[in-house]
Length: 303
Image (cartoon, rainbow, N blue to C red; front, side, top):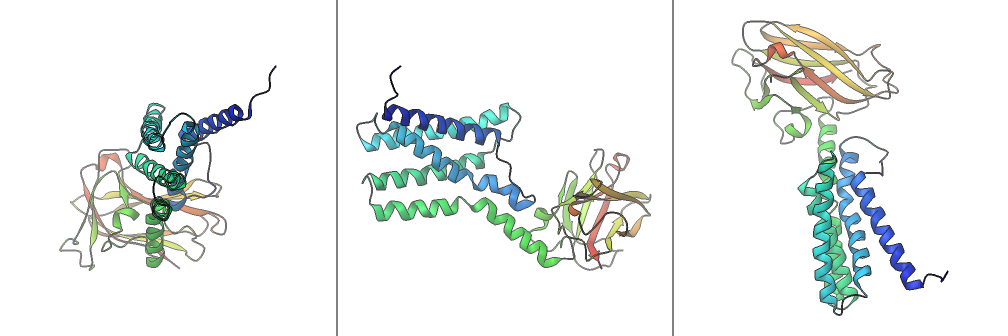
């Protein structure tokens, strides 16, 4: 057998690496060690750097085929757009999450790589291309900036889980029901804004607080002030989702009469607070209460 020529070997290695990069991104083979808003956003933040590498490989593969550098850049851009859209559509077909924001981040990474390549090949001025590419790569990290800001705000209002006068309300509160920030009912003089929750027709309608402060060692109780609208009692359950505990959650149901109702959930003996970390807090009712309304005025931890 004849040995593989160095140029052909390099081409084969580049093609192989490109395929590996595409498969790794599409199938999300790399698992990150952390959890929470920041670590959930890291894969999106890496899209730019990942696609810059993909773009550079395409440029390298095309270098020997095009007579002019401008042709290489244009052809690479066309191929890059096709790959970015194609990988997202493939994820959708295989049950993954296809997001236009991922394609945008891919384009940012591709643009940075094209600028560096063009500066290197003297298609554009070096002192123009490199700074612009640097700005684009820094900008591609934006997906992790918002989680950092949200988590900093969350920590600043502790031991409250949320404040309804903040622009971060719906970053800290999620729901499948109809929710709105409103003034409290006239017969409930608690001061401040409240969250009005009109329960949806689902198994456990209510609201949840993803990624609250996770270390609850300093606290012994979780309290919530609610106001039940109407003339009938309403069952409301507090469920605390856990990580690193012997159980994945603990919960307690409260029977709230119409009007103001304070939910006080003692934490002693529920889980090992020295080891377990809280990943979510849920306030929910039952499907039988669909269409009814309660107001949440405050939810906070107590020492």
